[in-house]
Image (cartoon, rainbow, N blue to C red; front, side, top):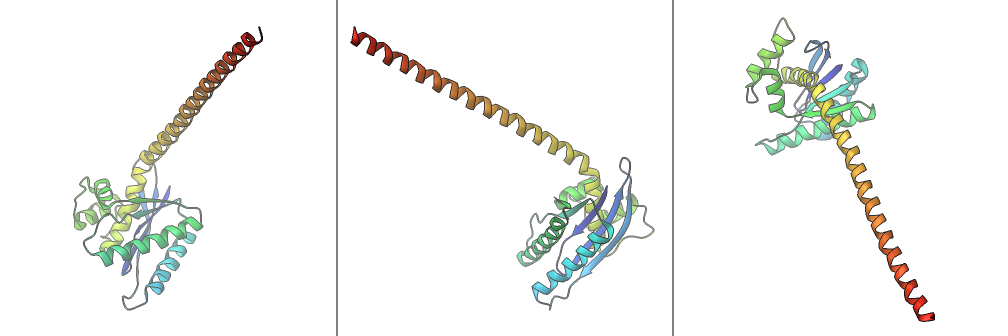
Length: 208
């Protein structure tokens, strides 16, 4: 599985691509950070991010895009910018029929370090070890993008099992609803038939 990890942001947007192998084996293929000037209009900044992301998608042809989910942020403008960038990236993926999955920061940290509250330095250290990189990826946005890709690679089997279980549950739910509907229809038909027989009996007695 080839996963493109994206740490969305307007000022800095981390991009990475890793290849998943057998078990928990992962190999880093590329990593970079897209920067946009704060003085630029929002539309131009989003366009720059979109262009860069689409180039990466067309070049690396990932099987899935893993994007950090905006969970909570004390700085509302920053959270809004992050969400806008994530939306642009998800749209670019949808146009190419590439699956998109969102992971919260705590999920990524737990997957990579075993601690959902790990700091950025811990994440960077573990990403460097896991991918056996010669040097630590910088800035932190690059390490976060790699961590997102690693997280999805390792969580993908569980996600697939959950999706399969949900699909099976949906099938069972439809079957149950169909059974209830058939039972109600049969009961209604029985009541109707009983009422019809009762009416016929009264009419017969009246003729006699």
